Length: 231
Image 1 (cartoon, rainbow, N blue to C red):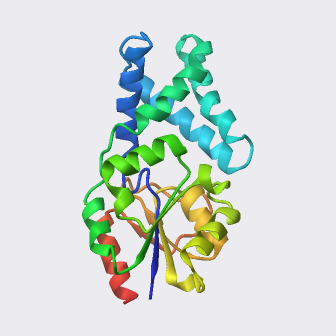
Image 2 (image 1 turned 90 degrees about the vertical axis):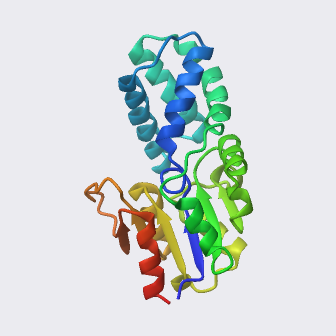
């Protein structure tokens, strides 16, 4: 029986891509960079993903990826690369301004509160995550919130999950289920930590990562079937 549910935030509970697009549009106006096209938003999103995956592989520090992604993006689109540092600083704040829930994520979490120990596990920055968790009301739902900036380690590292387990009192890893959308961060991290994982994959992407997952769902509502089976 599961007693602890670890929830990824961006891409699982909250629609990160929607918030990302809103933040980019707002900052392009602030920095007088004109209108940002959907193609440019997609370009940035791809670059951003690449940099976060480099962080997960310990190839760059978080400080390097946060500014580096904007340097590369601005260089490609012909914008002033020297803006990258200030743009990134403002982006952290703007990203927390836009809260869009995925499916019935908030209702599902509310239904689980009191039945399970709920923990938010996220690699996002402290500034952005604390703001969006507060504005969304998620800070009142989760029993524990673990932002990598505060933990001092990133998913998928074992150190990150060991910290979470200690803080929420896990003694039997068979009682833990991690729900997340990232194979390289959530699913790999859960596998390395020795816990069951549930891959939220609404786009039905193929798993070519070599990372094994315990369960796979395309709607968050299907999680209830898994939890019922483990009764």
